[in-house]
Image: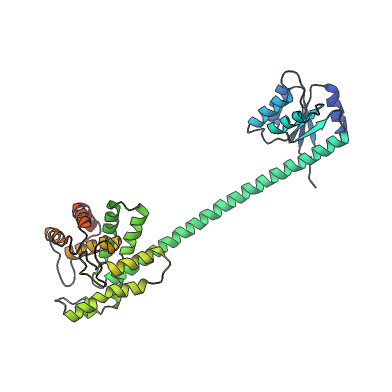
Length: 355
Protein backbone atom coordinates (compact mmCIF):
# COMPACT_ATOMS: atom_id res chain seq x y z
CA UNK A 1 0.00 0.00 0.00
CA UNK A 2 1.46 3.34 -1.08
CA UNK A 3 1.40 6.45 1.07
CA UNK A 4 0.32 9.45 -1.03
CA UNK A 5 0.44 11.95 1.84
CA UNK A 6 3.59 13.57 0.46
CA UNK A 7 2.33 13.67 -3.12
CA UNK A 8 0.99 16.71 -4.97
CA UNK A 9 -1.43 16.77 -7.91
CA UNK A 10 -1.47 19.89 -10.10
CA UNK A 11 -4.78 20.67 -11.81
CA UNK A 12 -4.55 22.92 -14.88
CA UNK A 13 -7.85 24.21 -16.32
CA UNK A 14 -9.08 27.63 -17.38
CA UNK A 15 -12.67 26.84 -16.32
CA UNK A 16 -13.36 27.45 -12.62
CA UNK A 17 -16.36 25.08 -12.61
CA UNK A 18 -14.18 22.17 -13.73
CA UNK A 19 -11.61 22.98 -11.05
CA UNK A 20 -14.29 23.14 -8.34
CA UNK A 21 -15.68 19.75 -9.40
CA UNK A 22 -12.23 18.19 -9.22
CA UNK A 23 -11.26 19.80 -5.92
CA UNK A 24 -14.56 18.75 -4.28
CA UNK A 25 -14.27 15.23 -5.66
CA UNK A 26 -10.68 14.84 -4.50
CA UNK A 27 -10.97 16.67 -1.16
CA UNK A 28 -10.82 13.50 0.92
CA UNK A 29 -7.71 12.09 -0.80
CA UNK A 30 -4.31 11.91 0.90
CA UNK A 31 -2.40 13.99 -1.62
CA UNK A 32 -2.22 17.78 -1.83
CA UNK A 33 -3.80 19.68 -4.70
CA UNK A 34 -2.41 22.71 -6.52
CA UNK A 35 -4.19 24.73 -9.22
CA UNK A 36 -3.16 26.72 -12.31
CA UNK A 37 -5.60 28.55 -14.56
CA UNK A 38 -3.50 28.74 -17.73
CA UNK A 39 -0.53 27.24 -19.52
CA UNK A 40 2.26 29.68 -18.56
CA UNK A 41 1.38 29.56 -14.84
CA UNK A 42 1.18 25.75 -15.04
CA UNK A 43 4.73 25.58 -16.41
CA UNK A 44 6.00 27.97 -13.74
CA UNK A 45 4.25 26.03 -10.96
CA UNK A 46 5.54 22.70 -12.23
CA UNK A 47 9.11 24.03 -12.23
CA UNK A 48 9.16 25.10 -8.60
CA UNK A 49 6.57 22.74 -7.05
CA UNK A 50 7.61 19.50 -8.87
CA UNK A 51 4.16 17.88 -8.58
CA UNK A 52 3.85 14.11 -8.74
CA UNK A 53 1.04 14.25 -11.32
CA UNK A 54 -0.53 16.88 -13.58
CA UNK A 55 -4.17 16.93 -14.72
CA UNK A 56 -3.96 19.13 -17.83
CA UNK A 57 -6.84 20.58 -19.80
CA UNK A 58 -6.24 20.56 -23.57
CA UNK A 59 -8.56 23.33 -24.76
CA UNK A 60 -7.27 26.51 -23.12
CA UNK A 61 -6.92 29.99 -24.64
CA UNK A 62 -3.45 31.12 -25.64
CA UNK A 63 -1.24 28.18 -24.79
CA UNK A 64 -3.21 24.94 -25.12
CA UNK A 65 -2.52 21.72 -23.24
CA UNK A 66 -0.53 20.15 -26.09
CA UNK A 67 1.98 23.01 -26.04
CA UNK A 68 2.20 22.96 -22.25
CA UNK A 69 2.87 19.23 -22.29
CA UNK A 70 5.59 19.59 -24.95
CA UNK A 71 7.34 22.29 -22.92
CA UNK A 72 7.17 20.22 -19.74
CA UNK A 73 8.55 17.13 -21.49
CA UNK A 74 11.42 19.06 -23.05
CA UNK A 75 12.62 20.29 -19.66
CA UNK A 76 14.72 17.74 -17.67
CA UNK A 77 13.31 19.17 -14.42
CA UNK A 78 9.70 18.34 -15.35
CA UNK A 79 10.04 15.73 -18.09
CA UNK A 80 9.26 12.74 -15.84
CA UNK A 81 6.07 14.18 -14.29
CA UNK A 82 3.09 12.10 -15.52
CA UNK A 83 0.53 14.18 -17.45
CA UNK A 84 -3.12 13.17 -17.78
CA UNK A 85 -5.09 15.18 -20.33
CA UNK A 86 -8.54 16.49 -19.46
CA UNK A 87 -10.58 16.77 -22.64
CA UNK A 88 -13.96 16.67 -24.28
CA UNK A 89 -12.23 15.64 -27.54
CA UNK A 90 -12.98 12.00 -28.21
CA UNK A 91 -11.47 11.64 -31.67
CA UNK A 92 -8.69 9.06 -31.89
CA UNK A 93 -6.35 11.50 -33.66
CA UNK A 94 -6.54 13.87 -30.70
CA UNK A 95 -5.65 11.14 -28.24
CA UNK A 96 -2.87 9.82 -30.50
CA UNK A 97 -1.36 13.29 -30.65
CA UNK A 98 -1.36 13.51 -26.86
CA UNK A 99 0.35 10.15 -26.40
CA UNK A 100 2.99 11.08 -28.98
CA UNK A 101 4.00 14.20 -27.06
CA UNK A 102 4.19 12.38 -23.74
CA UNK A 103 0.87 12.18 -21.88
CA UNK A 104 0.17 8.96 -19.97
CA UNK A 105 -3.65 8.95 -20.01
CA UNK A 106 -6.89 10.77 -20.86
CA UNK A 107 -9.87 11.65 -18.70
CA UNK A 108 -12.97 12.68 -20.62
CA UNK A 109 -15.28 15.52 -19.74
CA UNK A 110 -17.75 15.66 -18.09
CA UNK A 111 -15.83 14.11 -15.22
CA UNK A 112 -16.74 10.93 -13.42
CA UNK A 113 -15.10 11.65 -10.07
CA UNK A 114 -14.70 7.96 -9.25
CA UNK A 115 -12.86 7.43 -12.54
CA UNK A 116 -10.67 10.47 -11.82
CA UNK A 117 -9.74 9.13 -8.38
CA UNK A 118 -8.86 5.70 -9.75
CA UNK A 119 -6.77 7.03 -12.63
CA UNK A 120 -4.90 9.42 -10.33
CA UNK A 121 -4.30 6.58 -7.85
CA UNK A 122 -3.04 4.28 -10.62
CA UNK A 123 -0.62 6.82 -12.08
CA UNK A 124 0.64 8.01 -8.70
CA UNK A 125 1.41 4.38 -7.84
CA UNK A 126 3.23 3.94 -11.16
CA UNK A 127 5.14 7.16 -10.57
CA UNK A 128 6.18 6.11 -7.07
CA UNK A 129 7.21 2.68 -8.34
CA UNK A 130 9.32 4.36 -11.03
CA UNK A 131 10.98 6.61 -8.44
CA UNK A 132 11.68 3.65 -6.14
CA UNK A 133 13.15 1.67 -9.04
CA UNK A 134 15.32 4.61 -10.07
CA UNK A 135 16.58 4.98 -6.49
CA UNK A 136 17.28 1.24 -6.26
CA UNK A 137 19.01 1.30 -9.63
CA UNK A 138 21.13 4.23 -8.47
CA UNK A 139 22.08 2.36 -5.29
CA UNK A 140 22.77 -0.79 -7.31
CA UNK A 141 24.84 1.17 -9.81
CA UNK A 142 26.94 2.64 -7.00
CA UNK A 143 27.44 -0.81 -5.51
CA UNK A 144 28.39 -2.26 -8.89
CA UNK A 145 30.86 0.58 -9.49
CA UNK A 146 32.33 0.13 -6.01
CA UNK A 147 32.63 -3.63 -6.44
CA UNK A 148 34.01 -3.20 -9.96
CA UNK A 149 36.65 -0.86 -8.56
CA UNK A 150 37.39 -3.31 -5.75
CA UNK A 151 37.72 -6.11 -8.30
CA UNK A 152 39.94 -3.96 -10.53
CA UNK A 153 42.11 -3.08 -7.52
CA UNK A 154 42.30 -6.75 -6.54
CA UNK A 155 43.23 -7.74 -10.08
CA UNK A 156 45.87 -5.01 -10.20
CA UNK A 157 47.36 -6.22 -6.92
CA UNK A 158 47.27 -9.80 -8.16
CA UNK A 159 49.01 -8.77 -11.37
CA UNK A 160 51.63 -6.86 -9.38
CA UNK A 161 52.17 -9.93 -7.20
CA UNK A 162 52.52 -12.17 -10.24
CA UNK A 163 55.01 -9.78 -11.81
CA UNK A 164 57.00 -9.57 -8.58
CA UNK A 165 57.13 -13.38 -8.29
CA UNK A 166 58.27 -13.68 -11.91
CA UNK A 167 60.91 -11.00 -11.48
CA UNK A 168 62.20 -12.64 -8.32
CA UNK A 169 62.26 -16.00 -10.07
CA UNK A 170 64.34 -14.53 -12.89
CA UNK A 171 66.63 -12.78 -10.40
CA UNK A 172 67.11 -15.95 -8.37
CA UNK A 173 68.22 -17.80 -11.49
CA UNK A 174 70.60 -15.10 -12.67
CA UNK A 175 72.17 -14.48 -9.27
CA UNK A 176 73.92 -17.82 -9.52
CA UNK A 177 76.38 -16.24 -11.97
CA UNK A 178 75.53 -12.53 -11.49
CA UNK A 179 75.72 -11.61 -7.83
CA UNK A 180 73.78 -8.36 -8.34
CA UNK A 181 70.94 -9.88 -10.36
CA UNK A 182 70.84 -6.69 -12.46
CA UNK A 183 71.30 -8.60 -15.72
CA UNK A 184 67.63 -9.53 -16.00
CA UNK A 185 66.55 -5.95 -15.26
CA UNK A 186 68.72 -4.64 -18.09
CA UNK A 187 67.52 -7.41 -20.42
CA UNK A 188 63.94 -6.42 -19.67
CA UNK A 189 64.62 -2.75 -20.45
CA UNK A 190 66.45 -3.56 -23.68
CA UNK A 191 63.78 -5.99 -24.90
CA UNK A 192 61.02 -3.44 -24.23
CA UNK A 193 63.01 -0.76 -26.07
CA UNK A 194 63.67 -2.87 -29.18
CA UNK A 195 60.12 -4.19 -29.28
CA UNK A 196 58.83 -0.61 -29.17
CA UNK A 197 61.18 0.38 -32.01
CA UNK A 198 59.82 -2.55 -34.03
CA UNK A 199 56.34 -1.06 -33.70
CA UNK A 200 54.97 -3.51 -31.16
CA UNK A 201 52.05 -2.14 -29.05
CA UNK A 202 53.11 -0.80 -25.66
CA UNK A 203 51.34 -3.44 -23.54
CA UNK A 204 52.88 -6.20 -25.65
CA UNK A 205 56.32 -4.60 -25.26
CA UNK A 206 55.94 -4.73 -21.49
CA UNK A 207 54.85 -8.37 -21.71
CA UNK A 208 57.90 -9.29 -23.81
CA UNK A 209 60.22 -7.42 -21.48
CA UNK A 210 58.87 -9.15 -18.39
CA UNK A 211 58.88 -12.56 -20.08
CA UNK A 212 62.51 -12.07 -21.09
CA UNK A 213 63.58 -12.00 -17.43
CA UNK A 214 63.02 -15.78 -17.39
CA UNK A 215 65.08 -16.51 -20.51
CA UNK A 216 67.70 -18.45 -18.53
CA UNK A 217 65.43 -20.05 -15.96
CA UNK A 218 66.61 -23.44 -17.23
CA UNK A 219 69.97 -22.77 -15.60
CA UNK A 220 68.45 -24.11 -12.38
CA UNK A 221 69.14 -27.52 -13.88
CA UNK A 222 72.82 -26.82 -14.64
CA UNK A 223 75.45 -27.79 -12.00
CA UNK A 224 77.39 -24.87 -10.50
CA UNK A 225 80.66 -26.55 -11.37
CA UNK A 226 79.81 -26.07 -15.05
CA UNK A 227 77.80 -22.85 -14.85
CA UNK A 228 80.44 -21.00 -12.81
CA UNK A 229 83.52 -22.59 -14.33
CA UNK A 230 86.11 -19.79 -14.86
CA UNK A 231 87.90 -21.47 -17.76
CA UNK A 232 86.81 -22.75 -21.15
CA UNK A 233 84.12 -25.45 -21.13
CA UNK A 234 84.80 -28.88 -22.55
CA UNK A 235 82.55 -30.14 -25.38
CA UNK A 236 80.73 -32.32 -22.90
CA UNK A 237 80.22 -29.43 -20.49
CA UNK A 238 78.98 -27.16 -23.26
CA UNK A 239 76.49 -29.85 -24.30
CA UNK A 240 75.14 -29.80 -20.74
CA UNK A 241 74.99 -25.99 -20.70
CA UNK A 242 72.92 -26.02 -23.89
CA UNK A 243 70.22 -28.09 -22.21
CA UNK A 244 69.16 -25.05 -20.17
CA UNK A 245 66.98 -23.89 -23.09
CA UNK A 246 64.97 -27.12 -23.09
CA UNK A 247 64.92 -27.25 -19.30
CA UNK A 248 63.52 -23.71 -19.18
CA UNK A 249 60.88 -24.68 -21.73
CA UNK A 250 59.79 -27.62 -19.60
CA UNK A 251 59.78 -25.58 -16.39
CA UNK A 252 57.42 -23.03 -17.94
CA UNK A 253 55.27 -25.48 -19.94
CA UNK A 254 51.54 -25.98 -19.46
CA UNK A 255 50.54 -22.52 -18.21
CA UNK A 256 47.41 -20.67 -19.34
CA UNK A 257 49.06 -17.41 -18.26
CA UNK A 258 50.04 -15.46 -21.39
CA UNK A 259 53.15 -14.08 -19.75
CA UNK A 260 54.48 -17.55 -18.92
CA UNK A 261 53.63 -18.79 -22.42
CA UNK A 262 55.74 -15.97 -23.84
CA UNK A 263 58.53 -16.71 -21.34
CA UNK A 264 58.44 -20.36 -22.39
CA UNK A 265 58.88 -19.36 -26.02
CA UNK A 266 61.81 -17.07 -25.22
CA UNK A 267 63.49 -19.61 -22.92
CA UNK A 268 63.41 -22.24 -25.65
CA UNK A 269 64.52 -20.08 -28.58
CA UNK A 270 66.86 -17.35 -27.32
CA UNK A 271 69.96 -19.35 -28.36
CA UNK A 272 68.73 -20.05 -31.88
CA UNK A 273 70.70 -18.24 -34.58
CA UNK A 274 69.58 -16.38 -37.68
CA UNK A 275 71.64 -18.75 -39.88
CA UNK A 276 70.20 -21.88 -38.29
CA UNK A 277 73.34 -22.89 -36.38
CA UNK A 278 71.93 -22.26 -32.91
CA UNK A 279 70.26 -24.59 -30.41
CA UNK A 280 68.24 -26.50 -29.34
CA UNK A 281 66.33 -27.01 -32.61
CA UNK A 282 68.47 -25.31 -35.26
CA UNK A 283 65.66 -23.12 -36.61
CA UNK A 284 66.57 -20.01 -38.60
CA UNK A 285 65.45 -16.56 -39.78
CA UNK A 286 61.87 -15.53 -39.15
CA UNK A 287 61.05 -19.01 -37.84
CA UNK A 288 62.71 -17.86 -34.62
CA UNK A 289 60.04 -15.94 -32.65
CA UNK A 290 60.71 -12.20 -32.66
CA UNK A 291 60.76 -11.87 -28.82
CA UNK A 292 63.46 -14.56 -28.70
CA UNK A 293 65.51 -12.84 -31.43
CA UNK A 294 65.37 -9.56 -29.50
CA UNK A 295 66.25 -11.29 -26.22
CA UNK A 296 69.24 -13.00 -27.90
CA UNK A 297 70.72 -9.64 -28.88
CA UNK A 298 70.12 -8.09 -25.47
CA UNK A 299 71.49 -11.15 -23.67
CA UNK A 300 74.74 -11.32 -25.65
CA UNK A 301 75.31 -7.57 -25.46
CA UNK A 302 74.80 -7.42 -21.71
CA UNK A 303 76.80 -10.60 -21.01
CA UNK A 304 79.80 -9.33 -22.97
CA UNK A 305 79.69 -5.76 -21.65
CA UNK A 306 79.28 -6.78 -17.99
CA UNK A 307 81.50 -8.43 -15.40
CA UNK A 308 81.07 -12.08 -14.51
CA UNK A 309 82.90 -14.30 -11.99
CA UNK A 310 84.78 -15.84 -14.89
CA UNK A 311 85.49 -12.71 -17.02
CA UNK A 312 85.76 -8.94 -17.11
CA UNK A 313 83.60 -6.60 -19.24
CA UNK A 314 84.40 -6.03 -22.89
CA UNK A 315 84.77 -2.43 -24.11
CA UNK A 316 81.55 -1.27 -25.78
CA UNK A 317 83.37 -0.75 -29.09
CA UNK A 318 84.47 -4.38 -29.11
CA UNK A 319 80.92 -5.57 -28.34
CA UNK A 320 79.49 -3.44 -31.16
CA UNK A 321 82.12 -4.83 -33.55
CA UNK A 322 81.02 -8.37 -32.64
CA UNK A 323 77.36 -7.54 -33.16
CA UNK A 324 78.14 -6.20 -36.63
CA UNK A 325 80.21 -9.27 -37.42
CA UNK A 326 77.41 -11.60 -36.30
CA UNK A 327 74.64 -9.67 -38.10
CA UNK A 328 73.04 -12.13 -40.51
CA UNK A 329 74.80 -15.02 -38.81
CA UNK A 330 73.87 -15.14 -35.14
CA UNK A 331 71.53 -12.17 -35.14
CA UNK A 332 68.62 -10.81 -37.17
CA UNK A 333 70.26 -8.13 -39.40
CA UNK A 334 67.43 -5.62 -39.09
CA UNK A 335 67.27 -6.02 -35.31
CA UNK A 336 71.05 -5.68 -35.10
CA UNK A 337 70.91 -2.37 -36.95
CA UNK A 338 68.18 -1.05 -34.65
CA UNK A 339 70.06 -2.30 -31.59
CA UNK A 340 73.32 -0.61 -32.55
CA UNK A 341 71.49 2.65 -33.30
CA UNK A 342 69.98 2.39 -29.80
CA UNK A 343 73.29 1.89 -27.97
CA UNK A 344 73.19 5.37 -26.30
CA UNK A 345 69.80 4.55 -24.76
CA UNK A 346 70.90 1.04 -23.86
CA UNK A 347 73.97 2.33 -22.04
CA UNK A 348 71.64 4.45 -19.89
CA UNK A 349 69.96 1.24 -18.71
CA UNK A 350 73.34 -0.02 -17.53
CA UNK A 351 73.99 3.21 -15.62
CA UNK A 352 70.51 3.24 -14.06
CA UNK A 353 70.84 -0.37 -12.98
CA UNK A 354 74.34 0.20 -11.56
CA UNK A 355 76.08 -2.15 -13.98
